[in-house]
Image (cartoon, rainbow, N blue to C red; front, side, top):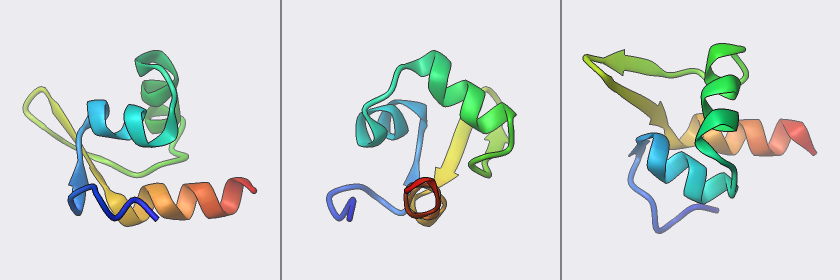
Length: 58
């Protein structure tokens, strides 16, 4: 699952992987559903956190 993505995703990659919009992606992060780190103005999301979110949402 998500083999073509690197281990750390940015918002653009996360949106593409989950097939969601930026607004929805930011909402998932802000609500704490997917953990992230903010480095400067960039959001960094671990790929395994996205996979865990997908598994738990089913």
